[in-house]
Length: 461
Image 1 (cartoon, rainbow, N blue to C red):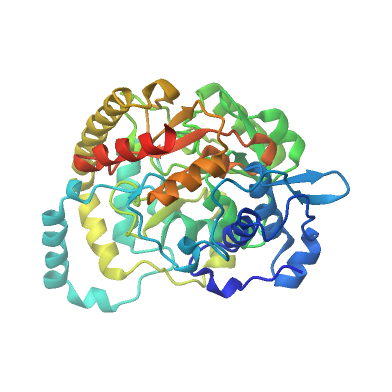
Image 2 (cartoon, rainbow, N blue to C red):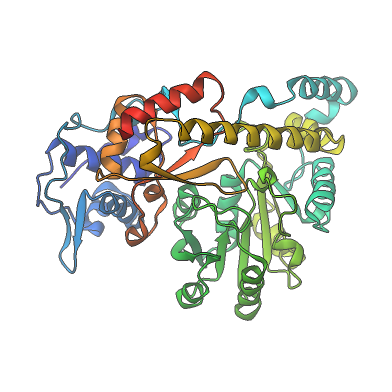
């Protein structure tokens, strides 16, 4: 039976670490072509993990062409899965060493630190420390500091057209932490997730024991026929800017989704993680703002607009769920530091946040234009096709190549370049669209852009 030390995974999700270990054994030849992998249940029991974890790892290997699923027989290593340059023995250095230092990372979401008004933040921090030091020694409510919730409610009212009260807002340590709380709130319910979709959403819910069902997308977003057929009670979507496809769900489809929630008694989790960075003059209203039945939970965070290091996010509960939330989850302490909440409250209420967003949108628009222009002049321009969404910090780049995503990834990793592929985001391997890069461009300025072009030319040509 295959055995791996899962305690050495560091911060890497278990399924991803297991996938890398299996992939490394396949590429190195330790697992031979045509060899059958252990059954999902048997391997899960042997390693002490869930069957869903093993299934996710196997699905990713199948999506990359490393293994194939044979009906009623199991998973087998594909013939020719090992490339010309075999991988090193054991788990990849990037995983074994914990946090790898990449020469350039085009996969992770990032924000240019130079765009943030550090001076303003420092001034507000000093003001909080000098004017109300005793408040920092007082614990904040479970749902977060009232001043911060009032500031967020005012921002949502003015910027998003959402008439919500501070009592409906819950502050938490980032969106992923809030996903975990929502999994507990809807314990026992099946979750429908966009496929392809942001992998961490699936990891958070399945890691909390939730049953997740993938729902495919069409040109307008979530497919209603699949949603109705899957029997899920909760739908998690990003209608303003779907990751990774960039789809924006039109108003008619949003109304149909709300109708589904009303008729089934289900709930919709509206993940609005980067809609503030849209370039369209008049974005569509949020699902929450047009929800008359109290079936939408709105989730957002400040990781994209301020810093990924600021583990602060929030959700807006419909009034019908306030009592149940308090009863079932009110015992949790708010995990966002008190000082950070006080400063953030003043940053939003003082209008600094909206001014920062205005500057950030302009900078991102200019940066995206520069990146697209540089790619159009590059040596790989004739081998790619770029899709340009009007919102967010990433775009898609279809590559004309016969190489698999696994081969492209291996080439890039040897150069110290980290790439993200749409196939990484597929829950169902049948929906794994190959040869599509998800390019996060926010940090590509100056010399970094030139470096990105040079490295991509080496990988693609």
